[in-house]
Image (cartoon, rainbow, N blue to C red):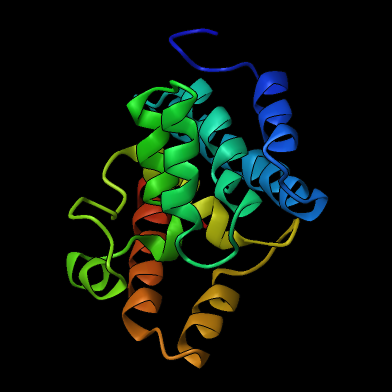
Length: 176
């Protein structure tokens, strides 16, 4: 493991070994592909971004779905990779990828431990954004995710997704 990161093959094996369904693994692979494309574009534009961290974290972002499919899969996944000894950067990406982030107020309402659940680093934002753009295993317009959130009454989360989309496209200087 480089810098404590598993290889791609090891990360995929972790998904299988923890019991992630095939559909979840397929989703994780699609998120990884898009996240890698975005990260590579950012790197070409001169942004310092850890491509290996993006790849492995994107692969593992939904590992918590091996145990639950509710919003808490992010906390469960973070705990799984923590027990495996993976770096804090991977843990944070997994913990912060849902809903373009969970605010402190939302975390309290969910009964989550006090922590930061909104993407902070460029790597966290890229994986979170790529996840919002993948429906099952295909890329969809960002409006699809926004409409889904709004139709379920998650207006603040929809706004965070809009803002994340704006941030990513602005720093890229092009639509994705």
